[in-house]
Length: 72
Image 1: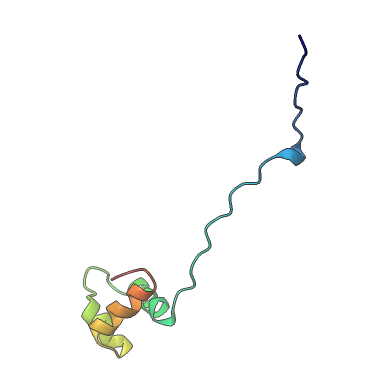
Image 2: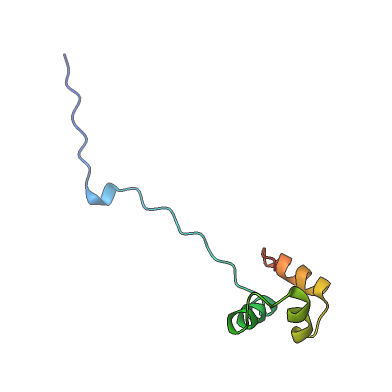
């Protein structure tokens, strides 16, 4: 019976770890919303007041946040 040679693994044979998911860059609007939320009282901040502080309608705020795959 013929013997099959054992396969020896070295560190160079390792499968590389999967790449970490790339993070999306946040838009300026999303970054500004985060800053407002971080410095404000979260229990009292509503989307309408955040939108007003940013000088836009709440609909525009929602649309821009949705473009960044997030929501208020």
